[in-house]
Length: 442
Length: 193
Image (cartoon, rainbow over all chains, first blue to last red; front, top):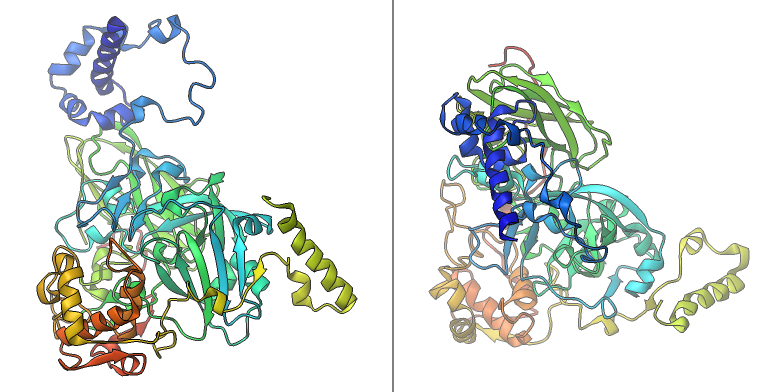
């Protein structure tokens, strides 16, 4: 066993050096992880690169590895499969800015994910009084207020209703709050943009559930309330409630995770995440919004003149480059694919432009299918890095024609007292040594 | 799923409705699935904790500033500081006149538009370690004290379902609806400044 683990360590060291020799895959996973070592090789320094060349044979990776000489784990050894132990650093990271973990938030590791779907265990978290442990057999959803028939539904009832599955993003209103002021800024895209996830959600249109109770014509707003210890409550306009809002019980094919509202949550597509009430237990219809704490004191936008914008639900078009991004190191000159995510609360992404010179020249990125409304869209852009400093930016345009604004434009319009709904173009700086850092420009 | 009887009940209800209404059932009726249990508002009252800004939903009971001060010091001060000055959690008092500055101080008094929200939030979510543990009298008293700390009601004020909705918050007129999109980027592509 000891010999095997030593060999594994040797192999990892080889990979660290190896990275300096590769080009097409030079910001592969290990390059990102061990950027400092890789960076040392970029400037054709002797050190690791030379040491590596002494082991040319094993560097090519052509060996009969230990895992080919011994059978692996048996079927059923992991009834609920987990990622490889080599991926153990791909985790949510909680903020250090919250005074208690009961009301705090954690970020999705966007730079370690591909495609558009966020694995369930990595969906960002925002809880206001902890994560309740709810028995679905005891859970109830009440619908009352301005309805024909106040109604209580069990989970069994809800699971019997006609369901839909839709891929939709979920973004905290505060995603990007660290980028409004020039300091302190986030070092990684996980911390700057990771209050963002995208899942395939399965549930029942809220319109179906409201029809069961019978909506009275004078009802104009719905209060949605959670069964958590915060009894989180938000008012939602009836128009949005009847449009595309869902009552969901599953994400990415399995029942909701407790952190995501198990056994039942609201999903208000394209809107600030706080509206998608988790652990949903009550819907009340009324003529006016309730002006709850979380739609007055919080989740409102304070303007420079002291006025306050309220019910700013839509998350406007936004994009960010996730690869390369803060904390990465480009292992060598040559080809690098720039890749990132774009999304809009108003519908589909129409196009994404990429600039490598801080916004002077822009070119179209390629969009991966599927391009879905109110979902993350993956964009890709081929780039040959020749070693000069670069400023990488992406700019999303949605199907309404709305163009993601610059940071300067947003701050001119809203000042810096407004931290929520910040959707500015983001800039990563690439230094000649290959290091990628957060650069706030324009 | 759990109980055959429960599963069957809506189906029976549907049969009954079809039987009664026959082909003249309304369109809305046709879209219904007849799942769930029809209840009365009074059966839901333990859950019916929200307060509207006109005071609808406020329970019986009353509480004074003085009673609120005592309660605050035993149940709230640890998180919100003496006199609502905050730390480690939100500051609750002061800050009026700072919202248009570079260092706005957002508190109940400087920011919140409606006094009913104080009652609603304290009752549903406070204290953090024991939400929904306060009696209506206690919530009224705490609300009175927090309003008094902000100079909004007098030291001898008593809050109840009649007086609380009449309290006018200083910042109520600052609130606006969403004016976005509020920026326009021309999406320059060549030789942009």
